[in-house]
Structure formats: C-alpha cells, structure tokens
Image 1 (tube, rainbow, N blue to C red):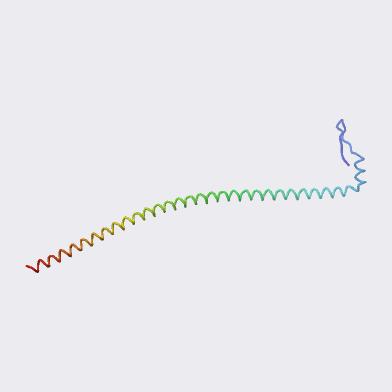
Image 2: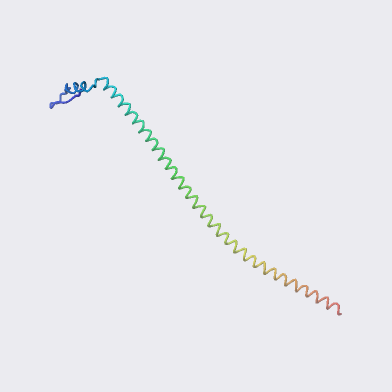
Length: 133
C-alpha cells in the first residue's frame, strides 16, 4: 500500500498498490523482513563508514606525526651538517697550525745543532789554546 495526496491535500491509500503487492507475493511479513534486512544493511554500512572515518583519522594523525618527525630529522641533519662543516674548518686550522709548528720545530732543532756545534768548537779551541801555553 502506498499513500498519496490529492490536489486538495488530503491523503489516500491506493488499493491498486496493495493488491499489486499481494499479487507479486509481497505480504506484510515479507515486506517487514525486507525492511529489517535493509535496516541491518544500513546499520552495517554506517558502522563501516564510522570505521573508515576512524581509520582515516588515524592515518591523518600518523601522517601528521610522520611529517613532524621528518621536519625534526631534517633540522637535526642540518645541525649535524653545520657541526661537521665547523669541525672540518677546525681540522684544517689545526693542520695548518701543526704544519707551522713542525717548521718552527725543525728551525729550532737546526739552530740548536748549530749552537751545540759552535759550543763544541769553542771548547775544542780552548783546549788547544790551553795546551799550547
């Protein structure tokens, strides 16, 4: 049975529709069962939609967290690269300083050897002078 409205707004039931339902084998209990099946299907779809929304929310939160973590890692990488560059510069300065110190040490060792040779020559000369007198 279906309800309809007339031009003046009053409601009527179509007898043709109710007899058609009976002819097609649709009685009220089968219609009720079909309605229940459809309600259950709608509830199942609503549950699936809710689950999908929750899953979407979790995925969005995971993506947000991953983006934040990526930003933190990028920042940490930049800091480490800057620190590495600073360490390389310091290493170059240390190498330069070491090279200069090694040159200065070699010069000092040469000077020490020269002074020791002069001292030995002077001692030798004194001995020779002392022995002749």
